[in-house]
Length: 176
Image (tube, rainbow, N blue to C red; front, side, top):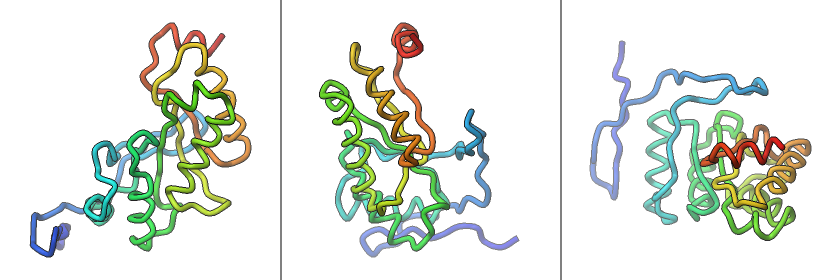
């Protein structure tokens, strides 16, 4: 078997050997869509050329699932790196999240958050997110946010939707 690693270069200098992922195990979500089990988290990745280089190295290493959020303020960095890779969009799994502020400002603000994520990721009008989550539920507001995400799912802007950082009582409120 041949060498399965890439040399990662950073600022023009050889930095380290980066193993290439040959296969990525997936799980099947409740709606039948596969989700890669291994994701590259965008939290703390700078929204700079350096951040774009970091994401580029992750792509070269074989990452195809990227976990981002509007509150990380680096979705455009991810979008540029994905575009530069030359790999078709359908080969990536992109997750993003709506933050607290849009929930407080209503359903249209939640919709705008999704649209801004899509724009930052440089998706076309037919763009979509593979997974979109409510990042942190805001009591009294998260249910309406979720309902708006359901509409965006029906419109094809979100393939799957979900929640994160929910307490049991918040989850019960959502089901209510």
